[in-house]
Image (cartoon, rainbow, N blue to C red; front, side, top):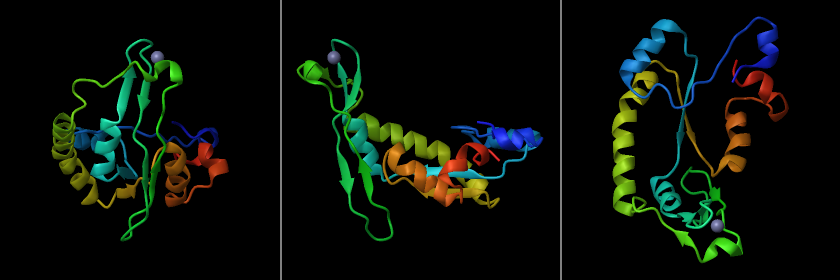
Length: 164
Ligand SMILES: [Zn+2]
């Protein structure tokens, strides 16, 4: 995502999403460009687990839904978390299936593998003072304004400034 306004002024900026995934990649990236900030999006693992286990697919039309409804109050300095379910229309309700690998055991293993891989990368950027930890307060509608606020970016000029 390039910042249009700054690009017009000759500045270039970009956002990498989900990269680098290893410290080796991070080291290589450091040699080719300067990374200003790394945002580590975090969410409580029990919420993530609930959302993963709430996934449903319609066996007839193939549409994806999520029956998990998350509504947790703020506590001990952690933000409230709200994530609305994505409920199926009546025509799909009786045809919902759960993917075979969306079990608690498999999801927990996926999360464990993810954390093992990402921890060294987080540490790489933390040690360089470039890591911003951001605890997600929910889905995209809940998170976006708060993320912009954390970055001191106004909603109306986010398109111009976010990639700076
Ligand atoms: Zn359907």
